[in-house]
Amino acid sequence: MTGRADGPTLAILPVKGFGRAKSRLREAVPDGPRAGLAEAMVSDVLRALGAVSGLAGVIVVTGEPLAAGLARLAGAEVVHDAAEAGQSAAAQLGIARAIERGAERVLLVPGDCPALDPGEVGDLLAATAAVVVVPDRHGTGTNALLLRPPRAIAPSFGPGSRARHEAAAAAAGVAWQVCELPSLGLDADTPDDLAALRASGRLGESTEATLGRLGVP
Ligand SMILES: Nc1nc2c(ncn2[C@@H]2O[C@H](COP(=O)(O)OP(=O)(O)OP(=O)(O)O)[C@@H](O)[C@H]2O)c(=O)[nH]1
Ligand SMILES: C=C(OP(=O)(O)O)C(=O)O
Image (cartoon, rainbow, N blue to C red; front, side, top):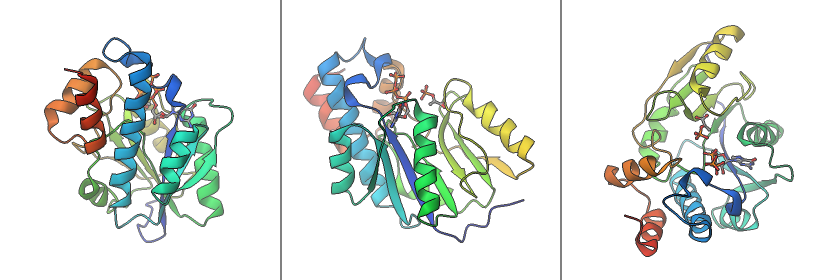
């Protein structure tokens, strides 16, 4: 089964509370500034998604008031996440809302990919497989998941998620593919990831400015 790329596609962006975000970056960025960095990254992701012509809209799933404010300013819908039960659970909240809105396809993206390039996302949206996995730079994680229909497989984010998503698609008997995108392969989980993001020269303006203000090398 392939998912035709002709029905509306909604992007779903789960965002954890900024005070608890990016704990793996604690060695490089202290608590307070780390919340500001998480906010800056979400701001860049929202800006990039807003420039993607093939998206019918964006749904931000969050319990973080600052993220909700950024979302509304960007014209995105906000789905409240009271439980903060993880990225996959949050994605499922977004998928349910997207289905209510008539989406035939969803693009699950994280809020920590501040190099996100609208052109690359546009290329991704041309894919017609029911499940498209965009791996992280390590090749084992999932930085984006394109699902047609929205429940083609259940999101299972976390370490080793690429293999789980591929296996789930195979088990569901749906067409799937892996699409490596330079800008989406770069998520900021660890200090090394942050260094790779800065070396890419593709950081979004808010994240770059925040890192500069924080004096993060
Ligand atoms: N709404 C919501 N978003 C989440 C939740 N957990 C993770 N996310 C988001 O999912 C995306 C990827 O999550 P991670 O890379 O694990 O981010 P993180 O949890 O801040 O990072 P660590 O604390 O280092 O694990 C980011 O946009 C997070 O904000 C959650 O419980 N609820
Ligand atoms: C969310 C994932 O991992 P991380 O939390 O390391 O970004 C993933 O790769 O599915």
